[in-house]
Amino acid sequence: MSANPGLPVPGESPASWSVRRAEQLIASLTGVLSSRIVAARDGDIEEIHVLVTSELQPKQAVRNVESALMAQLGMKVDHRKISVAQTAEVRPIEVLEQAAVHEAANRRSLVFAQLLVETPRPQRVRVRVILRHGDAACEGVEEGVDESHSRVQLAARATVKAMEQELVDAGVVLEGVRVVDAFDRRIVLAAVHGVGGRSTQLLVGTAEVKESAEQAAVLAVLDATNRWHALQR
Image 1 (cartoon, rainbow, N blue to C red):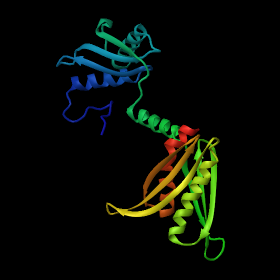
Image 2 (cartoon, helix red, strand yellow):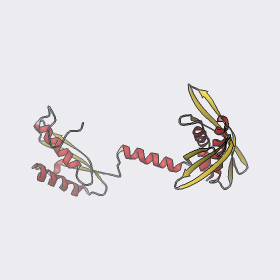
Image 3 (cartoon, rainbow, N blue to C red):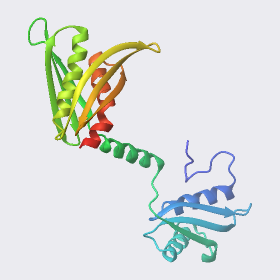
């Protein structure tokens, strides 16, 4: 639990409490990324180190720190005890992670959006796969005999059909898809030929069966082809 800046924590000395309040006050100032205070045991401030963004000039940062400490805490600090460092953009690690995930997603060629399995009439099944790239959607539909192995094949073929809508000078051909048991799990293995120019490349992908074998087939085809597909585009 974070400390309340208005109250001392159990066992905290008045001097430590004053230093903590000062650090939190400085860190709350506009343009300040972090602050650290070096103080004597009696709480007398010896050094103040402040990290600010490149938009805030060091002299202005010093004046801001002096004014804030005096106005809110009644602390008078010699400006010569305040050192200021500037840095380029610094973002919290959570923001950096989110940005990295978003950037990676943007680089991916296609992502799975939706899988629909319909039975238009007895003994027949229709599999509809929707993929997305940014705001664009592409759809592939395959129909065949309503049987478990057939459904997996249809899902993989519908994925390939949807994918081909994004290709201009290349194509993909499904070699095969199979559900296998490995490592105490059910895994779908997909093999696809990527055809680009005069070359053909065998692409292999896998996906663990979680929601359904049909969905895993879609993900296995994407796992096999996404990097290759991105290069073709």
